[in-house]
Length: 243
Ligand SMILES: Nc1ncnc2c1ncn2[C@@H]1O[C@H](COP(=O)(O)OP(=O)(O)OP(=O)(O)O)[C@@H](O)[C@H]1O
Image (cartoon, rainbow, N blue to C red; front, side, top):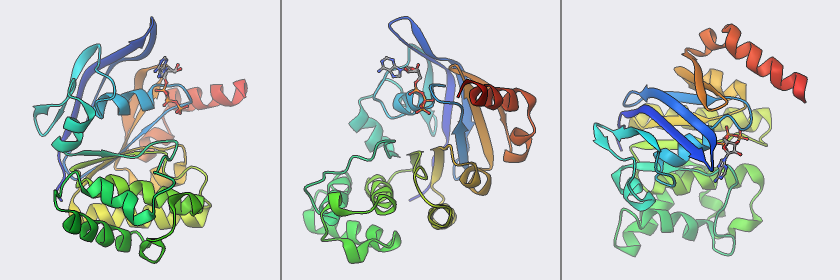
């Protein structure tokens, strides 16, 4: 596993006239961890869906190590090296933990035995190996989040997109996930882009943060710079006022 550079250049997407994302550009260097943050409805998941091939951008382009991936089907984007988790965890509930991860690994290994072996290794890394024969639906939320990450990793990505993998976790569980991701990044050089509302995780993991609001990028910088950026503070304060 090695990381790839992600480049997003002027992407836009509208849904029946509603501008969900407008002229957003940013890059994640190979091997870096960056975060994408912003209030609810800001366009974060739409950006992920454009990277992953679920949506084709109306404008702009997305490339991985210089190869354009925007417009490719999701399976082609996965084959190009993009692995992702979903905000709403959706494992195959009636399958075991091992079977769920093996399905991901079959993207890389045509041979079932090899795929299962690769899945077992990933489950060990994530501390799920002793639960490999349990049904996915029987797992606790933190374990389901780990399973989501395991399934994405099984596709052997060069870029990992994590959509709110910390949501619902207790602070100590967040720390465990942060430590795992930092370790994974350090040992493999995998590029990671995370959508995250849990600022504790963003501050601990991200070298740089991109902030979107109403579909547009409003700031970009280190977590410290972002935490002091007036436009960012205004957006989040506005969200609290509306709540
Ligand atoms: N398939 C779709 N059809 C119509 N509108 C959509 C679709 N997907 C997203 N939108 C709209 O696009 C805007 C951006 O949504 P998106 O889910 O990307 O935001 P988000 O930043 O990920 O929000 P959250 O933090 O709540 O997940 C919202 O107004 C949303 O309602």
